[in-house]
Image (cartoon, rainbow, N blue to C red; front, side, top):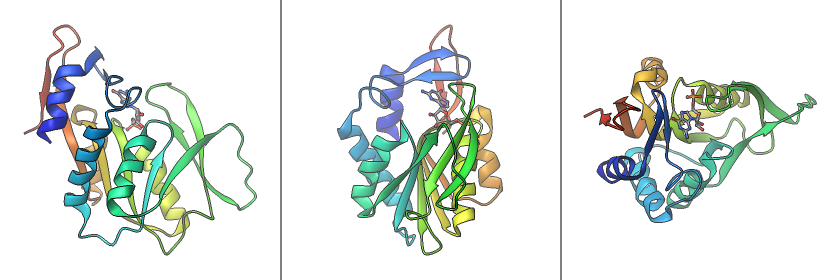
Length: 192
Ligand code: 5GP
């Protein structure tokens, strides 16, 4: 998506060989007009699917997922990072290795908000190794819900998580796929 690629080039900061900072418009300050355009693009890509729910993970997926949910006219559920899991049957739980914090989080979704009647579009801001998405997919599987598609804002293609999910057959669409980025020059190369 040209608009997003242009914005990443303009305001993104390559912090290291594998970390891109997009605090200026995506996950600290949020450009809602850009989010609207991203939501319309996900709608174009996924509106042929019978989606009745959007699933994301806190915190930085919530803003984009909420705007997308408005476009699809469906509720959005966010998986919560939890300190202690009470495995009393009221939640679906998984563990996710955090790319940015380097630690493992317990993540939960209430059994009230996802179930076997749900046809889910998963939305997240970044895709790197795929740990966050694998956790969300596992929650959907445990709930008996169908994953209809996965919409990502920025995929770092060189980290491989996205291509592994595509090989597993998921309809994964990323609005910008970075092939390489250089912390010395700040240069970012996108997949055509
Ligand atoms: P994965 O689980 O695919 O390895 O990483 C995805 C998660 O890590 C996303 O939910 C996102 O919050 C975070 N993340 C991964 N790479 C980056 C990055 O380059 N910049 C930022 N800001 N977050 C990232």
